[in-house]
Length: 163
Image (cartoon, rainbow, N blue to C red; front, side):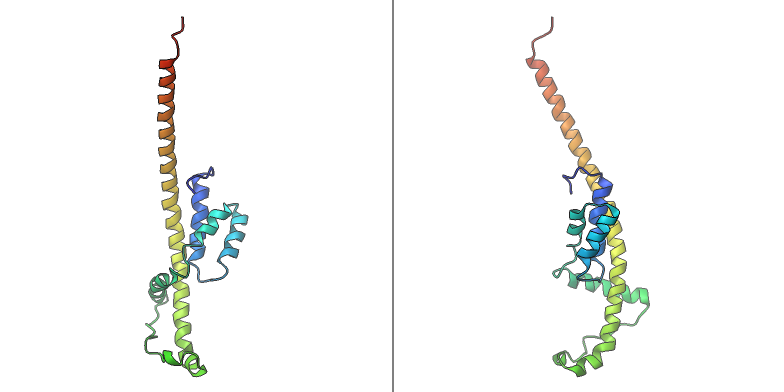
């Protein structure tokens, strides 16, 4: 991202869109959505796809642990007790008839929380990245200018004086 020639806003928007998509509960559709939106919005496809990798099988438990309480708060729902379900019978039909409503409620709370996190993380990612990229490019430009000044001074010392 830092080596791209695109404007900082485009680079930041590309990655931020991918991050926002990764926080949606539409697992399995992230890359399709990312590519489709990247084409429509004329963003960098690679940066958008890289952003979708933020939420992955390793990070989903942490994201769910944050998303469920947020969804519960936004929906003003009561806390569903899933710890007391008969998990040993999970592969039996009786478990799902008993646990189905609870699991559906928790799943809906998680989905609402993830959509909320999607908007927040996407916006924060954009703001942070656009400022980081601008700062990095300004630093590179200053370093290049200093290097050019030194090279010019060295050439002036080596060149014979004009008569």
